[in-house]
Length: 84
Image 1 (cartoon, one colour):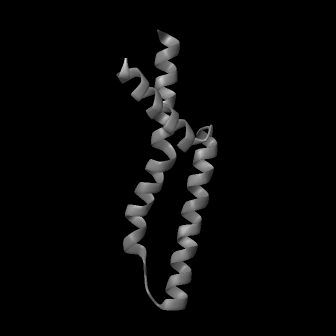
Image 2 (cartoon, one colour):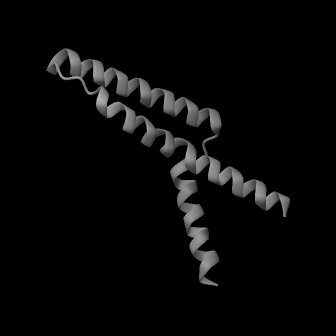
């Protein structure tokens, strides 16, 4: 009986992370955060003369995971529950 409760709390946490956003809302959030990171890199380059492009790659991957992994897991679980 504890396993369904643990998985339920996991999905509740995913729902809180996703915040009931749809695909296009997640895509828009990803785009906005990516633009802000690019602007931050330009600011860093012009003000501090330091290029932070080496950091943008891993951060883009982490941001993509943050926006899309919870959404796709919840989408798959919703489809599985509607099938069965």
